[in-house]
Length: 152
Image (tube, one colour):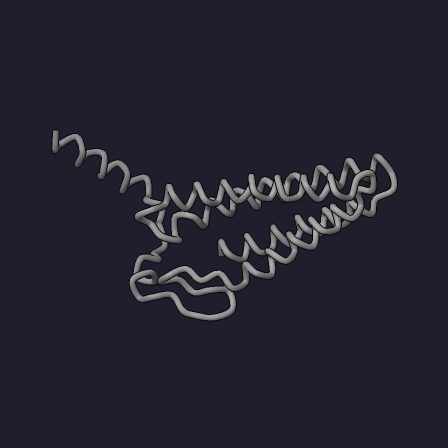
């Protein structure tokens, strides 16, 4: 589910940049930018939702690399805006195409033990841990509370 969310959010984010680049009116550009920002924030969050599954013992390092990727993109696209100034449409088109390209590439993400979007299967260890949580009845909660009190 996380990989699908990541892929879809990136695709919509890239589409919003392309729409923004082709918007001729200020009001429409502001509305598109607001939706673009929502998809940016959601995609960033979904990236960090995937991080713990990449390599659990080094989650902090992976999170640092993901964060550094954002800074690298900012520098790269900043340079594109500088090279194309004063015409800002081409850098936005490049940015949108790059984001959509990353959405396509996220189809090929493979995480050890988990199924990818287009191939693979979850390992038995992973599927064994997929249990549905149940909400206890009020009576069960009272009984559990009484047990906790009797243990003290």
